[in-house]
Image 1 (cartoon, rainbow, N blue to C red):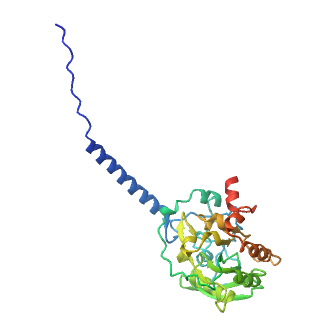
Image 2: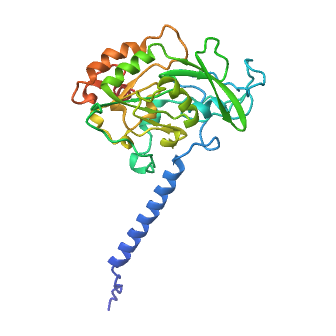
Image 3: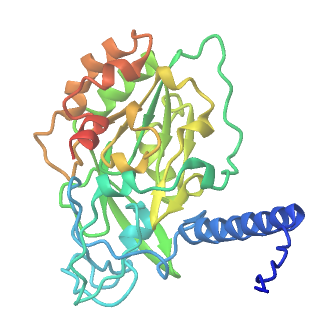
Length: 319
């Protein structure tokens, strides 16, 4: 008699066990996602956790220099040393940069930065001071302006023909800042204030920015509201600005900034402008007056802006 192998009954997998395992895996993924988001997104930038940026591919790079406190070797050329650059701390050029004689040859690419930035859902919500509500007298259109190298140029090194100077403090030292205004800036601001509700949104420190705004708008009639570094997020070591905190209609909002990647979530609202570092023959603001005057009449600014040859959305799609 031939013996047949005995069939071993297989115990069916428990559906409860499968559900528990899937639930545990989802929890592990959430924890990993939170850790990942926390690693790249913070509300403050630190010199210890941001990359060193040595070049800007579409921005005009500023000279790296060590500024001397007031009364110490004023006006001389400064040597590069291993210390935190005060310029970056005052003026908020997107990242902190440690000056070093042996800097790595890394190049910041704004297109790559925008394409790889985390989604807005991963960002912490900004705690912003109360934004003024629109009134009947407030223009329907909104213009958001950057400050440094868009409207003005400032330096801790002497500018011979500086129109203004003021003092600021950093690491227990007092520094003298030299300030010049971009050509046609007063004409530009006066005309735009008649057509737009104007916000200044800068990644510079409040103390520094307020000194400049006192010069541009001494009577506080041009700028409806002012936002500073404290109103930015730091993503991958760069200060990022978020239009959504203004609570304005994005269809009627336009941004003017020499660093378009600082508004990575709103490239459709952007007009990039060449960074200004003191050229006397500059006419960029003057040329924008008739363009923005006509834009203010459009139903949706984004439909008009995307037709520009320098529109960031177009450049990103071609990159």
